[in-house]
Image (cartoon, rainbow, N blue to C red; front, side, top):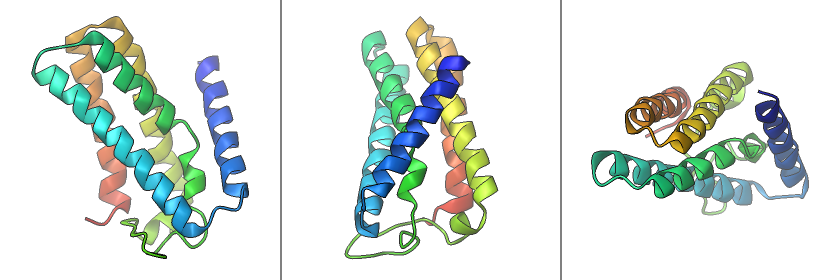
Amino acid sequence: MKKFVAALLLGSFAGVVLAQQGLKPEEMIKIRKAGYSFMAWNMGKIKANLEGTYNKELVLASANVIAATAGSGMGALFGPGTEKDVAGQKTRVKPEFFKEPDKVKELAMAYIKEANELQKVAATGDVAAIKVQFGKTGESCKACHEKFRND
């Protein structure tokens, strides 16, 4: 648990530092979209392994990426000016995201928790346990999408 808290604090600090580097709103949108796309791609790799030929190393590598990206402080990429499309960068975030910071934090922390647990379970190689945790991780991701993302 101490490692989790330390990683969360470091990730949050890194996110704040990144935001303070003077990123333009369109750069924040572009970076956050890339991060979420990279996590989705890695979730897809895990799903393919769970449905087909299982490769423990690939699943673990993908789970590591998901946990690291989830805990990297991506919240800092939702700065002022990123609530709407800007300079050719489109966003699907709903305005409510910026009006309900406590709910955003709750959902983000739940996702980070599940992503970290996926990483731990993936290290065991227990396919049945990974399937269960993969589902929990996906559901926590979906919870935020349902509340704060336009289709």
